[in-house]
Image 1: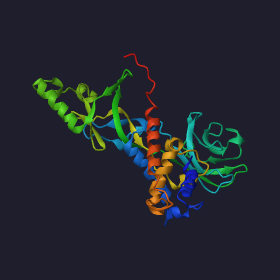
Image 2: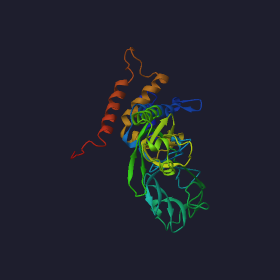
Image 3: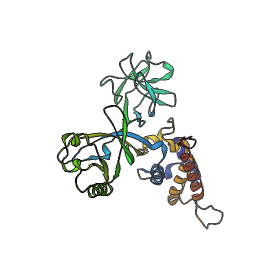
Image 4: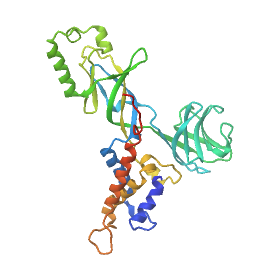
Length: 342
């Protein structure tokens, strides 16, 4: 289920019939606000396996690095098509994989946005018109290898399509750091809070009587390679190399394993009736999202009022039951049937 399909369900459950106008206050869509709140509250309570990500981060030896600068892999960007188009190809396109070495975006198997080797540029077209040999399409006329921009109509298609791609991903929590050696072997790197890293340095120095060569007389190789007892330490949204190498700002490239925040729902998603489920919450956690949104909007519409004869109390228990089922599903997603020899 997508947001556009969920909104009338919420409207009906709140006793508003088929009219969604009561869910809008001024210019603010309270359904959109409640949907974002419901999902963000769930993300605050649990790290879902489908939000696990891997990325790379270059950490300066002196000033550290911000976790906002992590470059992620495979984060499933979303393309949004707008304009007055015929046929109507507007809406939200999710990445369905790759085609000819470039990302392939689709909208419920009706339209595809993809790079065409035949045309040598990005093309938006109805799938019934073929792939590279299509004639009725919108085609990009500049910056040909980048899908973002303006597309002109060809064949029987009309209108100018404008395409934007959302790839913004914010790291929620770090699980581990690792690095790749020159041999290609990936090894873990110790990771701790800044206080834990400082304590580790103190214990090593006290237990060795200050006679560790790496500590007292680091060589150039030690400084540049960060061998020995290097630790990545986190302070707020920044990470640092410990011991801190103030004599060298030579950066070190590390692999980050962690969990991300999902991007916020947008008004375009709410109005796109042709979109696929915009995320796994709407695909697998529909019941939880339904009752969580109802509970929040009930404060405004007051359809469920306790201790009122002939009425029902807010569906908080239904929300909690759906939440527990969603957590149980996620807990069995990874490692539930692993067989170990040790």
